Length: 59
Image 1 (cartoon, rainbow, N blue to C red):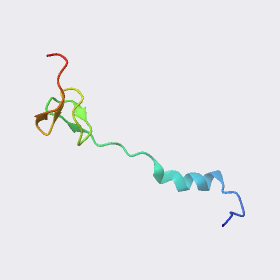
Image 2 (image 1 turned 45 degrees about the horizontal axis):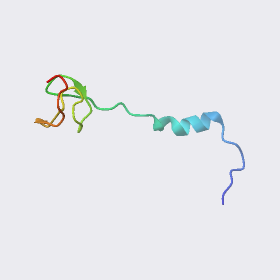
Image 3 (image 1 turned 60 degrees about the horizontal axis):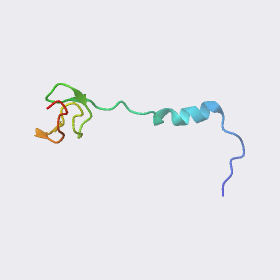
Image 4 (image 1 turned 60 degrees about the vertical axis):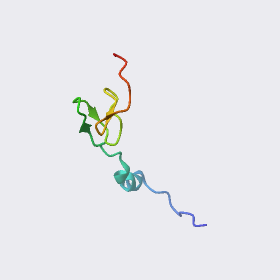
């Protein structure tokens, strides 16, 4: 098994990890106007692709 001969510096480690950051998620707006993640049921109204999947607690 290969073993590194010298310790990698903090600078080189951080440069290697520079592209590992978390990307900003896409945000779409539901028919009700609330921002939601794509391909997910809207948490406020329960709609997805024009169909009702969750009941409103208000009713």
